[in-house]
Image (cartoon, rainbow, N blue to C red; front, side, top):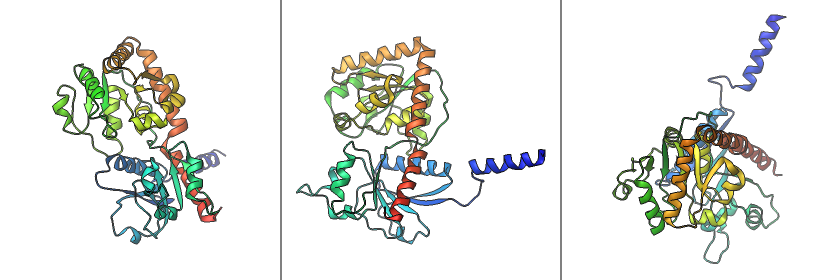
Length: 336
């Protein structure tokens, strides 16, 4: 009887945790382009999440002429703009901003209609899907966020505020945000990462670049214990997230964010907020007060970090998104 129980335990263990060295259950290819750094980061996160599911995830440049020669692909994920041209597997397009899909007459470019399915971040997902497929064909799409592979909660007291300087929109050149950054640059707790040109403007806080490898950003954030998230104007106007909120929550740190509607709706009071409509000085003063509160209330600060991490694991981890994509893929194959 004891032996039978041991065998049953081992069988259940192997069912839950794939056997090391076992053949991958899926083989997918993720496409990026040179200098699309955010997409490259996303590709490496996909690779790590896929490996957690016992999938094989290949990363290739969109211009790679050998993609059609890769054997046994289940599907190809396009993280960057470009019409479909690969015939070796089903093709799925991630859409974070759909404006580049229109021609000069605001009609969808024909090349995009050939995709087998779409991964959509925008709030108007249903309407966009209907616009893409208005011929009676099945509509295949899922909600998709630029999120992160699962992580363990690993909190350390916040001694630094990590800020990845935005490269999108006007945040690097906008006068108010430059002034805000300069206020922050004078604080000993501030640590900036970003393009090397930023060292000229923020000599005290700038600490260099971070590799786009799926883990380094999380490691840098975790080392500081607190992180600042400022969204682009388009993210704020549309109430959409960038990948920053997900990597922040996955990093087990205290999060300070502007009042992005998505962040407020989904992460609530697990995040500390600043009002981005105020002046640069007022924004800085709010950040400074938050950092003081974090230092003076370590247990409450830790609880905010724990709750944000819990929300990430429950609602936004990348492994679960990939499993939803797998379900969509099965529907595409069945034509339903």
